[in-house]
Image (cartoon, rainbow, N blue to C red):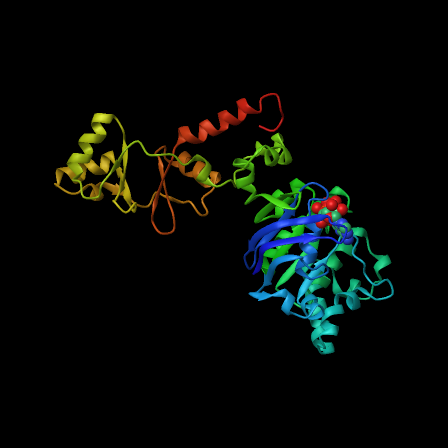
Length: 377
Ligand SMILES: Nc1ncnc2c1ncn2[C@@H]1O[C@H](COP(=O)(O)OP(=O)(O)OP(=O)(O)O)[C@@H](O)[C@H]1O
C-alpha cells in the first residue's frame, strides 16, 4: 500500500534526515516507526503526505508515485494525526471531525451520519459531544477527536506522529487500547511514529527501528524481542523487554527437530521397530517434499502393524499447530491435555518441527537464568 524505494531526504542545510530507505507497508498494516531522537521518523512520515518532498527515490501510495499526485488531493486521501492535535478552537467537535468530508463536498446528511458513527465508535455519546468545543474536552478526548477527524473521509492511509505522546500514562494506555480495537474494524494502513518502545510493542503489526535515517531492523514485535539484529537493536529494546515472552508469542520460538522422522512409504512395522529401538513414543511422517502426513503414535502403530498396514495408518493427524497463528498459550494447553510432542506445520501442510514439553520448559528456564535478579521473569 505504501512503498518507499531507495528514499532519501536531504534538507537544504545539508542534513541527511533519511538515507536510502526501502520499506514496504501492506494494506491494513499498522507499522510503527521508532528510533532515537532525530533518526528521521517524522521526516519519513511527512514525505508520505508530501509535507516534505523526498530528494531521492520514489514513494508510492496505492501503486501511484506520489510526486505525480497533487499534494492537496493526496492529503485529503491520507489521514494525519499529530501530537498536539490542532482542533479548530471555534468549531464544534462535529465540525472538526467533518473537516475533510466538507472539503470533499459530502452532503450534510452523510456528514452527520458519519460523525455520529465515528463518535460512537470511540465511545463518545454523539448527543453530548457533537456540539462541544475543543476546550470543553480533556486531553485524551481531544486526541480521540483528532483520530476520528483523520478517519472521517475513510482514507486508505493514516499517518500518526506521536499521537498519544502528550497524554498521561493512563489516558495513553486507554487510547492505545482503543486504537487496537478500532483498527480491528477499520483495518487502515497506519504509519505511527513513537519514541515509546512499550507503545510500539503493544500496537504494532510491524516495527521499523531507525537510526541516523537508516533502518536497523524491521519485524514484528516478537521478531525484535526474540531476534534483535544487532547490539543497537538489543540496547534500544532494553534487556527487560527482551525477556517479555508472552503467552501470545508465536510457537516458532520453541519449534525443534523431532527425534524421529520417517517416510510415508514405510510400513507400520518398520516404523514401530525404529521407535522401539530408540525408545520413543512418536515419529513424524514427512515426505520428500517436506509435507506432513501425521504423527505415528506407538499404540496406533501397533494396531496398524498387526494389520500389515502402512505407518500412516498408525498416525494421528488431528494433533497439530499452525506456525502462522499458533501461540505458546495454545501449545501449553495441548501439552497439558496430552504430554506428546505437537507437530507444527504451515498452511501448506509443510512440516516445520515439533513443540515439546521439554522445549517449552527450557525456554522458561533460560529466561529465569538470563534475567535472574530482575523482576521480569
Ligand atoms: N526543516 C528541517 N531543516 C533541516 N533539518 C531538519 C529539518 N527537519 C528535521 N531536520 C533534521 O533532520 C533529522 C531528522 O529529523 P526528524 O524530525 O525526522 O527526526 P525524528 O526521528 O522524528 O526525531 P524526534 O524523535 O526528535 O521527533 C534531524 O537531524 C533534524 O534536526
